[in-house]
Image 1: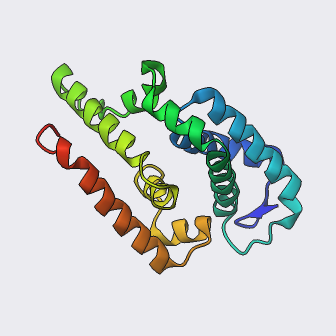
Image 2: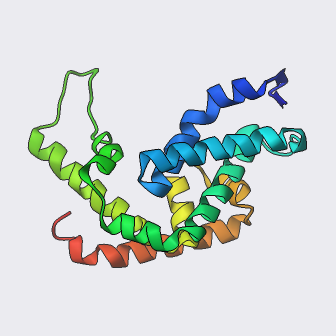
Image 3: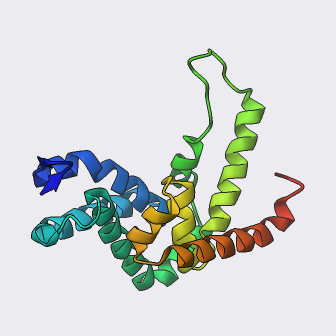
Length: 187
């Protein structure tokens, strides 16, 4: 396995990418235990398919493609359970959203508790509404918004054309905006 001319072992791949895959799994499931199980499954698949990697794309893109496909298959199998879980989230499962409060430590500035709470609540509402989008629109939006992927990376990860990614993101944002209408005055 090579990356940028250097040989990486499976252990090195795991060390380098496991946390990112775990974060992605958590965004898909909103359940830490399930996310850990799915991440383990993904790395078992990677280990089994390591000899099929052909350097046609960056190793990170290849790993993400395996992960996203695995997560989508999981969601399809567990759709009924997943929707129930999304509607019955516990405060412990909101850990990720609570960690997203923006703090400028280097300048010594902490947002007021009211502002931090408002931002946290806005992000929870937006994330909850994103999770209610159909998977074909939700996944590209999650990859763009939370993983920072560009159209090309999303295209490679999901095996879609760039125009399909652009269309899906446009529709996802349009659907999200429609779902946000009742919240607009509160956001």
